[in-house]
Image: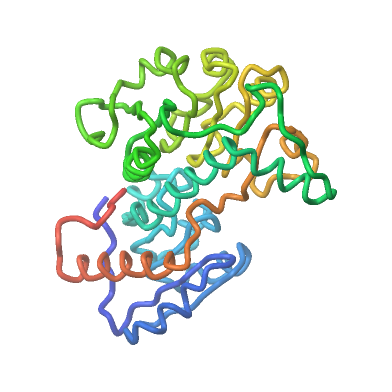
Length: 326
């Protein structure tokens, strides 16, 4: 189907839809004179989506909104990941879609490194001890002490912008980086070694840290299952800043509980927000951050930069969008 056409600037309406981000306020500072409104909840987006030609959204999007939005011509995703959008339905409806890839690459890579350091230096344990007023003594058992990163092997699964940035940061700590990616022939210059996805189980036994930065696809869903954890060594750590469904959480809990791996840090989980009853909350050697890896004080402005560029491309009749998905 032919893509829907954006109306002229003086007839365009943009909807910013996010529960927390200050997209509307930051957009006002651009003084574009483009008509826009902001919604903060799923219910409000459902009520007003039909008024918009453009929607800037991520977690509040539901694919059933397509039928309620006859004017909608373009979605600028707030997130780099786009697994929440039904691409086939977008194509059928003639709605274009672009991701926010690159807007948070530095933040996510830095967050991943922070989680690596937190695990290596036992920062969560120190915080827990502080909360109860406990001064921990020195540790006699060598394997239970804090560790340093120099000389450690880091396996990065997924070597896009975030993975490449993380590899660069890891080298500053004298880590050795192995990249695992679908096409090992290109795009992994920051790594010391690059292997194809089919060799994941082959490189896991050498990893001290494994960081997931891959997109969620049918091939990566439950990629880290019981077999993957069995391939890791007992002193290794897993860090997930990708998508929750890349990890089989039951297998992770089992691996952590049995000592199959030393620990893990998750910035994303299968069900978000994570329910209070979820077993993950109570796993001692697991650190959880609430999907905040991509958050930064510059995020709204970077998304707005992408939005304005992609609007301009469409008005000029350019062939493609920046970070075009559909």
